[in-house]
Image (cartoon, rainbow, N blue to C red; front, side, top):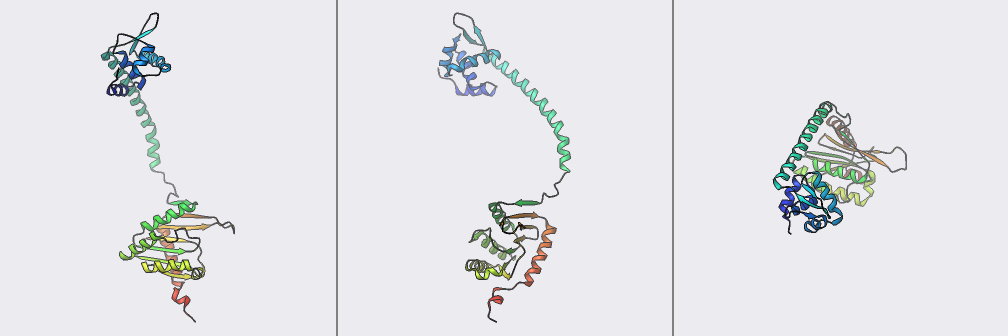
Length: 273
């Protein structure tokens, strides 16, 4: 006997398991079946059919027929569907009561939580180099009119940093500014100087100082990414902070501009005395 998949699915939606639905549909086709017979007809494993039949009997969807070999019969489909619907309504009633009680219990907690703010929810602490690089890329992408950087090794961006160059071009086309301050060490590093040249061609202004206190990125006087080197010398470990705080960003922007005014260009630092 081929079982109707649609009928199986409908019975499952009314709360039966797949095996229970298949066995019930098999039972309705005959006056009675033994467990072995209905297992074959419903394509249900023999070792499972007894549990399935017991479940149908408990739900009052099937009745046992005593005899030398026990057999089982289905109740009428109208009665079966009525009983399944009654069980579903009872289940929905319990869920409705439980959900009402849960909402009543949680609503005061939710309301109280709306007035609570984390005093540091504008600070993100980053320690993984990959996460730092991703946040740096994100700040570049978000910059709308100004991007200021203190650049010192080790650099987190890829060597080519094509995304950074695209950002600089985008900012300059929009009338914005991109400025970077490098350390004097960069003047002796051909790879870094090549990147400085490429960024310069894209529109970035660059200057140099003997030392920089830390790596820093300030975007649009609102977003900040800075490193906090481990004070234990020689560890090489660093922690980066991403801060979305306009007041702090404005202060760091003023600090950047003060350092910028003290720094020299490549031409000033490399021209012969």
